[in-house]
View (tube, rainbow, N blue to C red):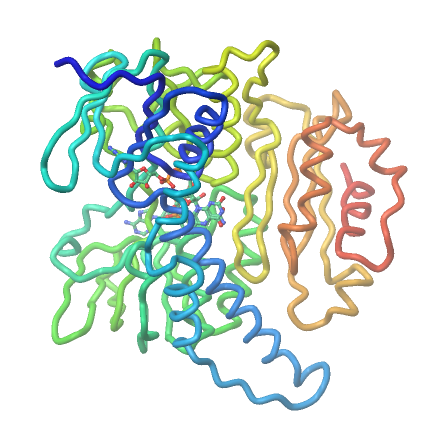
Length: 459
Ligand SMILES: Cc1cc2nc3c(=O)[nH]c(=O)nc-3n(C[C@H](O)[C@H](O)[C@H](O)COP(=O)(O)OP(=O)(O)OC[C@H]3O[C@@H](n4cnc5c(N)ncnc54)[C@H](O)[C@@H]3O)c2cc1C
Ligand SMILES: NC(=O)c1ccc[n+]([C@@H]2O[C@H](COP(=O)([O-])OP(=O)(O)OC[C@H]3O[C@@H](n4cnc5c(N)ncnc54)[C@H](O)[C@@H]3O)[C@@H](O)[C@H]2O)c1
């Protein structure tokens, strides 16, 4: 079918799609951006930004609750209505993306609301909300940035219940009395702590042996201890076997026969993507794959680039935007364009304590056959940790490739753990020799000074 000819079609306007589309449009290309939901994607409306706004509120509450052990009496009365109103009005503009659409169109792009699918090489068919279809052919090619949807595990009975996913939870107007969270990854842990701090009785049911299992085991342990100390029940190594919902209550039967009863249930068990619906088979890609394989320039096939969560290089907004920059440079044919380098990928789970990590975990470094030395130092043993007192749980762990004398990974858990991580990201990215890191001057008394002790402990 002949279609409207343009230079580039961006299907899915997540953080990276919005960025790559605007870059190409500003460079003078004829760009069409397509999204079935909201320009900006999951992050500003259903994920990072509203959940971090919740966390900002709960961190403030928790610091106030710590006052009696440090400074006197304080009375804390949490009010979720303030959080809900801030998310609705200030953070998401009531889930309205007009400002983002305007930003893209001001850059020179054309936005089309609808669901796009590949129907031939360099061809995208878009189904608009009114059911009409439009075909676009892209002279240079198509960029896919379609992201992921919440995965709902095939637990008996679950599909028939009114469970929440991240897309529901960001619009919650009232804190439930009790909440069961299925999944103890970043989403589950962050939101379990939010609702617990606002008064809900929370249980996390986590299939893996530890919370945040993509991170170092020590991180999962510190986090579990911190969450339990706040009254959250953490059940690891267990999944849900059967879920039912009756008279306003969820009954979640676990693998071991134990039953968790709660007013609400949040499913935070990972993400999924439907490659078949995207039509990737029409350009010769595997429709049954979990994502789209890309090379170091984000090329997936001739005239096809993919960026963001679907590439499987880390489901983070910063990854989507990093890949957007690389794809844009390749599409524009820039000489000496940057290629992707994932060695120093950072990630932060914004629980309290924050869990930040970069590069390889100790286990991953050993699995690669590296000659590994590790060093760990507890924040409570540092002067800053001692001064901080209540809420000082955390540690710095460094993973060294001893043959090359450089860090290949590091973890920073603690108050502002994600900010402290910055120094470690530089070290891993720039392959700063460990000897040089040990000669640095670390300001006293900071949390990041624990990096020096972790380096000294390398063995
Ligand atoms: C609760 C939660 C909290 C998170 N917090 C953080 C955080 O703090 N920091 C961080 O870095 N990351 C965080 N993430 C991950 C982050 O949200 C994603 O990595 C980020 O949104 C980047 O995703 P993406 O670029 O792949 O696309 P997405 O943001 O998923 O956007 C994809 C877009 O494509 C659209 N789309 C899909 N299919 C089609 C189609 N066929 N046609 C047209 N449009 C389509 C969708 O409507 C959507 O707008 C969080 C995730 C969750 C769930
Ligand atoms: N701060 C951040 O950067 C941030 C925050 C949130 C999410 N994200 C990203 O979004 C993505 C999704 O996060 P997520 O936490 O939903 O997924 P995840 O895959 O990281 O964690 C899901 C957890 O659910 C558990 N699980 C799966 N099925 C289960 C079942 N049937 N019963 C019990 N437990 C089960 C798994 O063991 C796993 O640890 C991740 O890739 C994450 O990196 C990033």
